[in-house]
Image (cartoon, rainbow, N blue to C red; front, side, top):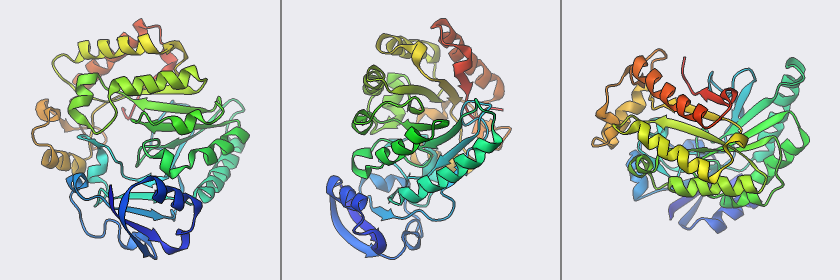
Length: 338
């Protein structure tokens, strides 16, 4: 339940606005001129989302498509991300959003045609620069889960049309959701990949609060793969615990039982990490979390991580297990590591 919907007057009658209001329960509606005058202007505790969550419907201004940081995706090809929303209905203890915005309130952007027009400019520019076999990647899910509320936001079909026309463009939809109905309505395309962030089942119960279980995410992946849609896996963030290796063995066994792992597009692995500000918020919001059980230090890029030897050991353990499952080594990459 959304307490208040704040909607920019200019897009109050927008079809996507109407769909959001129809699909997401709410108490009140208030019209405003510009969401940026209200969203995050007064600091709101992250955990207040449990009791009092507001939402904005707005138009995204400024830079609509941004270059992704190094090690964001498979190396050797350009990566960009676009912003379709801010904040998330889930509550993961390690989520960087708790230290990124001043508010956990949701923001839905509806000017997707403008975002797609900007993607076209980026694509046309990169096509000239890149070799003929190189792909141009666009990612969704940087600041909000790309599928969790897709039945309400209803924009995925718009992006589908863009990627059906632009064959060398690749779309990655990053998610922890099992809400795949909007994708199943669409024709599978070779250049659209839905990637699922996964943790071992018990780890997800501890830290991936309010998300679908690992089991349900894997079943969603299986349904997509069996329907001809491409899927990928993010083992991120990996959190150390005493039975770390056994827990991932069990996860990989479950994946192997439900998916054709040889047809998974790629698998990324990344150890839990935080900016200094986000780590301070995690310590404040979840002081009893076992995320704090192992030593963390300031790392090569200023982020707080496990010490390098520990990270390397954990990532090597994951990679060894994947190779035993006959995963092509070229499909495995390390996320946000030097």
